[in-house]
Length: 103
Image (tube, rainbow, N blue to C red; front, side):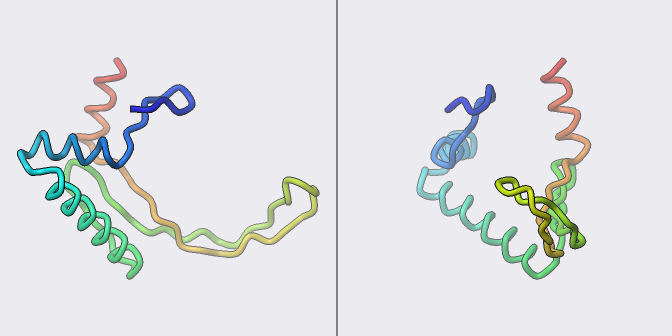
């Protein structure tokens, strides 16, 4: 795992290896499963659907209204258009597991 801004970061290869080890799948099968999961989440969110994984969390699309911001280089005002953005809302079990780890 790499360190990024003081945090350990797992990349895709490491995630696939962990999935393979825990599930007993071959790495190529774990890669296919992970790719399929990502494709399904992406496809459903693009259609405006929500994915609920009880205990783990929800993948949802939220709408951000248009706002006015500033160009960081010039300081000039600029319009930021409205858009839909994907979000992940962690479930209770995930929150509790992370909270115990931090204690």
